[in-house]
Length: 121
Image 1 (cartoon, helix red, strand yellow):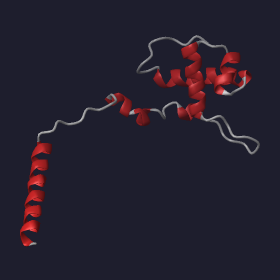
Image 2 (image 1 turned 45 degrees about the vertical axis):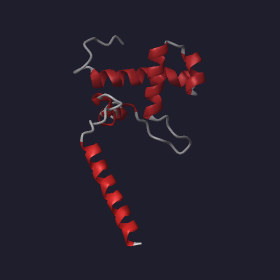
Image 3 (image 1 turned 180 degrees about the vertical axis):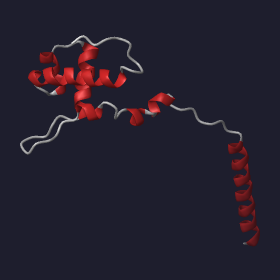
């Protein structure tokens, strides 16, 4: 019985040494995202204070995330408020308030560093 366990111990030790040698020369894994995308949580809050609304006891307000999503979808697709109401589930009347407010907030936050145009309102 003793020689079997010694053989098993030697085999386990040899396997462990082989694994250490094999993993020593491995390259560092590549990232799936760009560095600036990893900073999304750091910079995504810039517009939020400008577009957040308070909840009232009758209903909950539309979240800043939903406001930004509606605005970006409107700007990207060029759909009318009537068409947009089906994908976002917000009334066209409210979209008419949300989208200009959010555009103004985006402009306010980005104008000094990234935007070199004037706002015509």
